[in-house]
Image (tube, rainbow, N blue to C red; front, side, top):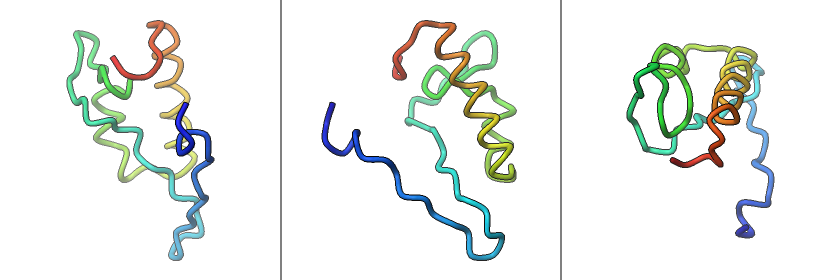
Length: 79
């Protein structure tokens, strides 16, 4: 594992809302499978389109669901 992959991401707070800014899990492999799930980040099509308007709590829930899909598929992250 590279040194940069081992360091935790810094927490960035939105000065307007006071919420933690959650970065997009997009890995630039943007293709939906037959179940409407991205093969790169494991978000559904609706989760991808909802991402930018979602609250931090909603983004964490999206990330948790995407991780469950990734684990179910037995993937290590990148297809």
